[in-house]
Image 1: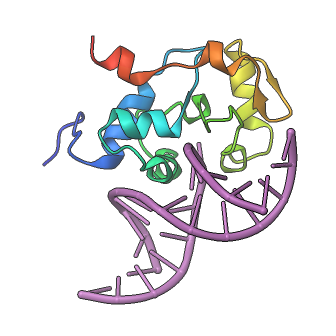
Image 2: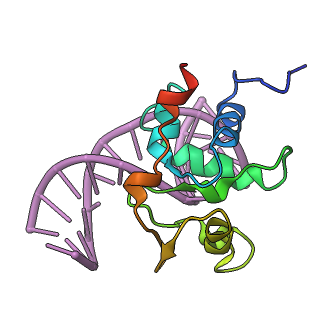
Length: 115
DNA sequence: ACTTTGACTATAA
DNA sequence: GTTATAGCCAAAG
Protein backbone atom coordinates (compact mmCIF):
# COMPACT_ATOMS: atom_id res chain seq x y z
CA UNK A 1 0.00 0.00 0.00
CA UNK A 2 1.13 3.45 -0.58
CA UNK A 3 0.71 6.55 1.48
CA UNK A 4 -0.67 9.82 0.26
CA UNK A 5 2.82 11.26 0.28
CA UNK A 6 4.23 8.36 -1.71
CA UNK A 7 7.09 10.19 -3.27
CA UNK A 8 8.65 6.95 -4.38
CA UNK A 9 6.76 7.29 -7.60
CA UNK A 10 7.60 9.92 -10.12
CA UNK A 11 3.99 10.90 -10.58
CA UNK A 12 3.26 11.28 -6.90
CA UNK A 13 6.37 13.35 -6.46
CA UNK A 14 5.23 15.69 -9.19
CA UNK A 15 1.74 15.97 -7.77
CA UNK A 16 3.06 16.72 -4.29
CA UNK A 17 5.34 19.42 -5.57
CA UNK A 18 2.79 21.06 -7.84
CA UNK A 19 0.34 21.19 -4.95
CA UNK A 20 2.93 23.18 -3.02
CA UNK A 21 2.90 25.94 -5.59
CA UNK A 22 1.41 29.00 -3.88
CA UNK A 23 -1.49 30.82 -5.45
CA UNK A 24 -0.49 33.57 -7.82
CA UNK A 25 2.79 31.86 -8.62
CA UNK A 26 3.96 29.72 -11.51
CA UNK A 27 6.80 27.35 -12.27
CA UNK A 28 8.16 25.38 -15.16
CA UNK A 29 8.46 21.67 -15.89
CA UNK A 30 12.23 21.57 -15.73
CA UNK A 31 12.27 23.05 -12.23
CA UNK A 32 9.81 20.44 -10.98
CA UNK A 33 11.71 17.59 -12.58
CA UNK A 34 14.96 18.82 -11.08
CA UNK A 35 13.33 19.33 -7.68
CA UNK A 36 12.25 15.70 -7.50
CA UNK A 37 15.69 14.53 -8.46
CA UNK A 38 15.08 13.75 -12.10
CA UNK A 39 16.51 16.74 -13.89
CA UNK A 40 15.82 16.51 -17.58
CA UNK A 41 12.59 14.60 -17.12
CA UNK A 42 10.57 17.71 -17.80
CA UNK A 43 8.43 15.78 -20.27
CA UNK A 44 7.47 13.34 -17.57
CA UNK A 45 6.10 16.19 -15.48
CA UNK A 46 3.69 17.03 -18.25
CA UNK A 47 2.81 13.38 -18.60
CA UNK A 48 2.01 13.18 -14.92
CA UNK A 49 -0.12 16.28 -15.26
CA UNK A 50 -2.12 14.49 -17.90
CA UNK A 51 -3.19 12.02 -15.21
CA UNK A 52 -3.56 14.78 -12.64
CA UNK A 53 -7.02 15.51 -13.94
CA UNK A 54 -8.32 12.31 -12.38
CA UNK A 55 -6.58 12.38 -9.02
CA UNK A 56 -7.22 14.01 -5.69
CA UNK A 57 -6.49 16.41 -4.27
CA UNK A 58 -6.75 18.44 -7.43
CA UNK A 59 -3.43 19.49 -8.82
CA UNK A 60 -3.09 23.16 -9.81
CA UNK A 61 -1.58 22.25 -13.14
CA UNK A 62 -2.52 25.66 -14.45
CA UNK A 63 0.35 27.03 -12.39
CA UNK A 64 2.78 24.93 -14.36
CA UNK A 65 4.00 26.39 -17.62
CA UNK A 66 7.02 25.85 -19.80
CA UNK A 67 10.32 27.65 -19.32
CA UNK A 68 9.14 30.37 -21.67
CA UNK A 69 6.13 31.10 -19.49
CA UNK A 70 3.85 29.84 -22.25
CA UNK A 71 0.66 27.97 -21.36
CA UNK A 72 1.59 24.86 -23.28
CA UNK A 73 -1.00 22.70 -21.56
CA UNK A 74 -3.91 24.95 -22.29
CA UNK A 75 -5.41 22.42 -24.67
CA UNK A 76 -5.49 19.82 -21.88
CA UNK A 77 -7.73 21.88 -19.64
CA UNK A 78 -10.89 20.76 -21.34
CA UNK A 79 -11.50 24.02 -23.11
CA UNK A 80 -9.20 26.54 -24.77
CA UNK A 81 -8.62 29.58 -22.60
CA UNK A 82 -9.51 27.70 -19.42
CA UNK A 83 -5.94 27.68 -18.14
CA UNK A 84 -5.48 31.36 -18.84
CA UNK A 85 -8.71 32.11 -17.04
CA UNK A 86 -7.60 30.20 -13.95
CA UNK A 87 -4.31 32.08 -13.88
CA UNK A 88 -6.03 35.43 -14.20
CA UNK A 89 -8.25 34.54 -11.26
CA UNK A 90 -5.13 34.22 -9.15
CA UNK A 91 -3.88 37.61 -10.22
CA UNK A 92 -1.55 36.38 -12.90
CA UNK A 93 -1.61 38.42 -16.05
CA UNK A 94 -1.61 36.37 -19.22
CA UNK A 95 -1.16 37.68 -22.71
CA UNK A 96 -1.17 35.61 -25.89
CA UNK A 97 -0.84 32.34 -23.96
CA UNK A 98 2.17 33.81 -22.17
CA UNK A 99 2.57 34.69 -18.49
CA UNK A 100 3.42 38.34 -18.04
CA UNK A 101 6.39 39.03 -15.77
CA UNK A 102 7.01 35.30 -15.62
CA UNK A 103 10.41 35.88 -14.01
CA UNK A 104 8.73 37.68 -11.09
CA UNK A 105 5.99 35.11 -10.66
CA UNK A 106 8.31 32.17 -11.05
CA UNK A 107 8.30 29.90 -8.00
CA UNK A 108 11.42 27.85 -7.47
CA UNK A 109 10.50 24.53 -5.77
CA UNK A 110 14.06 23.77 -4.81
CA UNK A 111 14.15 26.95 -2.76
CA UNK A 112 10.93 26.23 -0.91
CA UNK A 113 10.92 22.48 -0.35
CA UNK A 114 14.31 22.47 1.37
CA UNK A 115 13.46 24.90 4.12
C1' DA B 1 10.88 -7.00 -23.87
C1' DC B 2 10.65 -3.47 -27.57
C1' DT B 3 8.74 0.59 -29.66
C1' DT B 4 6.33 4.88 -29.47
C1' DT B 5 4.88 8.74 -27.20
C1' DG B 6 4.80 13.09 -24.76
C1' DA B 7 1.47 19.64 -21.17
C1' DC B 8 9.95 19.88 -22.37
C1' DT B 9 14.54 22.01 -23.06
C1' DA B 10 18.73 23.29 -25.43
C1' DT B 11 21.23 24.19 -29.36
C1' DA B 12 21.62 25.23 -34.42
C1' DA B 13 20.30 27.52 -38.61
C1' DG C 1 13.24 37.33 -33.55
C1' DT C 2 11.43 32.49 -35.21
C1' DT C 3 11.75 27.70 -36.86
C1' DA C 4 13.96 23.07 -37.04
C1' DT C 5 16.31 19.27 -35.08
C1' DA C 6 18.40 16.58 -31.29
C1' DG C 7 18.57 15.03 -26.57
C1' DC C 8 16.42 13.73 -22.68
C1' DC C 9 13.70 10.80 -19.18
C1' DA C 10 9.98 7.74 -17.74
C1' DA C 11 5.52 5.56 -18.69
C1' DA C 12 1.98 3.48 -21.88
C1' DG C 13 0.91 0.50 -25.84
